[in-house]
Structure formats: structure tokens, C-alpha cells
Image (tube, rainbow, N blue to C red; front, side):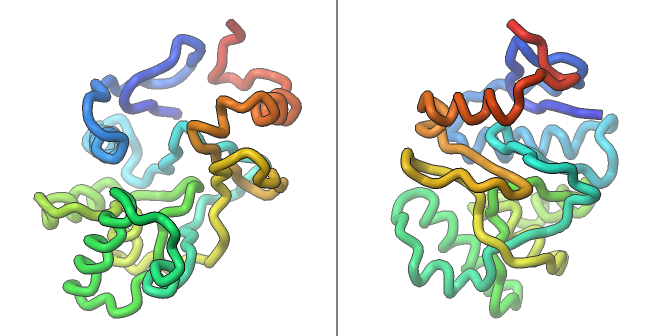
Length: 196
């Protein structure tokens, strides 16, 4: 079964909608949507999380944890210094306080699996703290996984490579060349889409 938490588009069909107003920052909204799914009894104990800007480019037998490697090494060369950076810093501080000396960074734009009980226990435990949910979850519960590069395309000119997954920024999805790529790559609607 497919569940969508938050808002839903009119072209979506054959899913279960968990309605939730989107009135906060994108990070707060995303967190609220994930927790709404985790608290819904209809959602399975282990569930695959997908964001609305993820594309699955090839059949997958399973969803396994993936990370970008050592968080400290990544932050040493990370170009962004805004809200996302502040979240990275607070996440690293939290993990260091838990005894995770060399945390891995799991904020890739690919599907991941959460266990509802573990996720809700983590959220209750760190109530009031600001942190990146995926990275704390997978480090806290020692998920392991494999290292890979992120698949998100942020700007025009970035090459679109055919791998297992792809993700797009808000700016990228508005570009005609990217829309044309998606139309070629996915010419037929799936069972969850209505052609409008």
C-alpha cells in the first residue's frame, strides 16, 4: 500500500491519504508528515519513506540504508552555511553526545526504511532538539549500509545519469529540459496517477 502524508495532488489515485496542513518550514513539515505516518496504525511497522522529489529509475528488490560516509569529513568541505548547515552541526553534536564518535551522514535523496516503534522512541527521547532525522536514526540504531554519492540534481547543467534513483530541486523541476527528460523516461502513467 502507498500512503501520502501531508497534502495530495488531484492527479493522485489508489493511495491512502493522511491529511496534514503544511504551514511550517519545509523541514518542519517533512518531519510532521513522517511522524503522522509513523503514528498511523494502517502503516506497516517497517515502512519505506519516499519524498515527493524522488524518482525510482530501475526495479529494486529491497531498500537498504545508504550514506555519504564520515559526517566530519563531509562537513569539512560542505559548501552550504545556512539552515541546513545549522541542522548538520546540531545533529553531529547530538550524535557525539550519544557516544557516536564517527557518525555517518544519511541525508541522501533516496528511499530509506524506518521502524515505527524505533522512530517514535527516538523522537520522544530527543523532544525539543533540532536534528536530521535520518542521520540520527541510522547512527543510533547502527543501520550500517553502503556509501554512495547523492543523486539530487540542484541546478541546470548537472548531468542526469541513469542509476537506481534520481531527485530534483524545486528549481530543476521547473526547467523544460528536466520535464522533457521525465516525460521521456516515464511515458506512461503508473497505477497511482491520473492523466489530467
